Length: 88
Image (cartoon, rainbow, N blue to C red):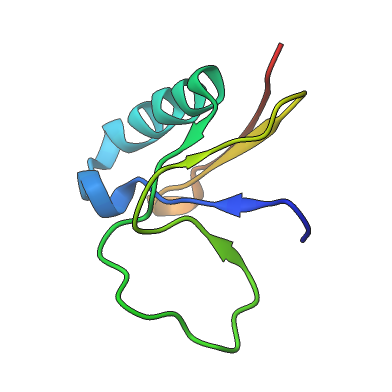
């Protein structure tokens, strides 16, 4: 997955149950608006078998031009949603 930065906000907020999807959506839209991917905190080491660009340590400035983001929310009882956003 070239040029796909992966970030998770639950490492910062914990699980907010019914509010998790809303908070994660706000974080996703703000990341696009400010063109900064927040880091996934509390990761000391990654499994070498995982070939993914996980944002950790410091926020990452996103490139110029059109960018997109997805927000996955998987809830209890099969209540699942994926939202896709793009910059304008």
